Image 1 (tube, rainbow, N blue to C red):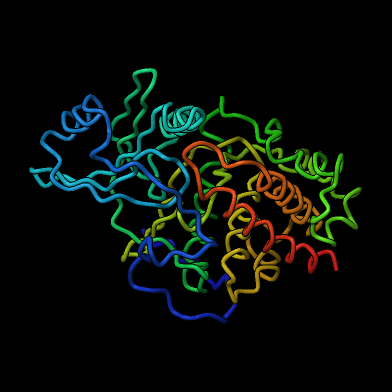
Image 2 (tube, rainbow, N blue to C red):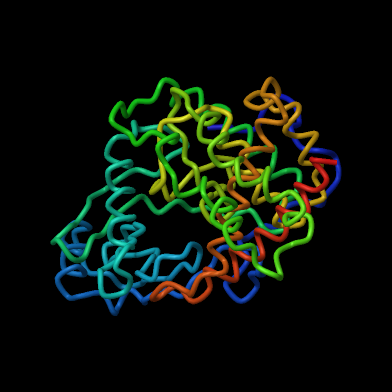
Length: 339
């Protein structure tokens, strides 16, 4: 599959992409990276299930740090040479993480086989531990800051994927407009504005407090959207195949939403790509009112700002710092978009 779009989507600034994905030690604060349990620490029953599904013993397990689940996420190789990717979590690590992985399992079971998705091998759920066994995609994550070549590849593939997922192949998917988790941040903060709130946000807090409900109306649609596209939720192969992973937040919504969500990660990364110009010409957002895009960005920024002020959840020590870093970058972008 060649996912490169026929014309360039990104600006012409930037540098060529790195040949390999950055290591965990090379990650910056703009990337989503948590602290994961190693594969060997999985319960014996779960590791036994993995080996039965793969047909032989696991001889190599390389942990991946992207994302925030405290459970293992590892690239596996068996004695027979078979490769796979496993992610798993139990309630003792974080009480909410099994629910999130179960949501991803439901989405992966509902998604059709498409070149932009990893193949599902098997799933496991004993009521406490849940695991998902997937194709091990031999690819790299886009580096931070994002560069033009990767923007072209990913957003070109996203346009194709969105077309394939419209109308949604999962009629029972959650509806994005019913997701209140992203819409109430500014409204919550407006009830008792913190003294150290960003001055621009504080000056516009009355208007921002209404952005969440407006955004919920705007994201309604008939596509199946990923809703969590970041560099760590993507893989790009040497052949140019783009694979979108981590579908825990998949929902039925407007087809333009994922392009806007991807642009949040571009902005956070410090890219030299002109993100506003990109949104204006991309096939999924070019005809969308720029104010609608800005309203969605405002709502997500409010969620991140409010949540970054909460205590760290169990097993997720890096989450609040990432949310705060992202919110700060998005606030600066919002100030420019609002003039």
